[in-house]
Image (cartoon, rainbow, N blue to C red; front, side, top):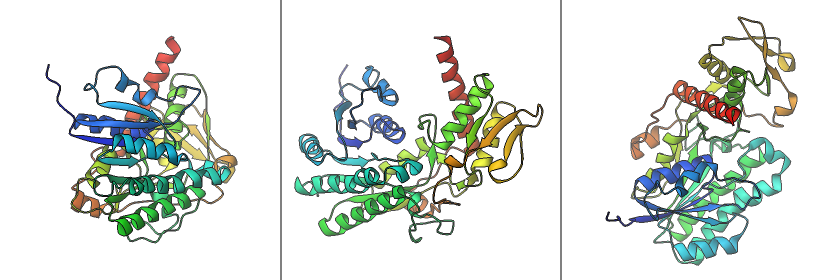
Length: 353
């Protein structure tokens, strides 16, 4: 069999995460050679990309490197040796609640980490070769009035949002100062089966799966009334690639344009396993219960509330639809169903071991 040569090389920083692994799959299908940057860990952290090692992919399509956004020397070495056509900076300390406990680390990784990558491109004189994608976030908007678009005021309410806002502005700055092809993707919440289990959507679907399999009776949540614009991660990684295929670099909001509360996400998840959940009580004393059996399903824990709450994030993706020709393909109900069924299947396999 004649092996088709890779047309372009892409460096994905944070390849072991949800977005990084999905983007790697997407780019390999487009005949890219993917260079994946992953952090060294004493425990296995490559589950999402293990299939890229099995030989089922195009030969020589994936090459992993150890690295970290806090290590500028290594970043320069890797970028110098690989000379990628595209760099996708998806690495971050991305947990909002955790950022209040580790603000310095969050700033060092999410803010200065972005600067280190941009500086590597500049120092190595790759301005005219390497295109750069920065993973921004809807958290930079904070409590600005919804819907939020590219012109909405930034009001971050967490160390994470604040660090990401620095990453956003330094990307724009380097684009202007050094004529870099550098884009910010302001992605609103995007989920799926590969989402980390400490994020609220996956925490919910996994707990619902455990209740369905009689592995637990109930679980704890924080702010049930927080609203988020939840999209499907697999749809969103395409938008990252599309930004770097345009004639001019720019910044784009990527969202569904619809918001859903945590409470509604819980209701949709339980509906998949045939449970109609009801609510009673207020504040920290509110509970969710099975209407048919009266069994307690959801309790509130004050420790899951953020010091600064963001109440309503809902994006306006008109610009992306017009210029990138990008639209979300998967509905929220479809995504929730896929996540719950995935967790049921995964937990069932674990039980059989």
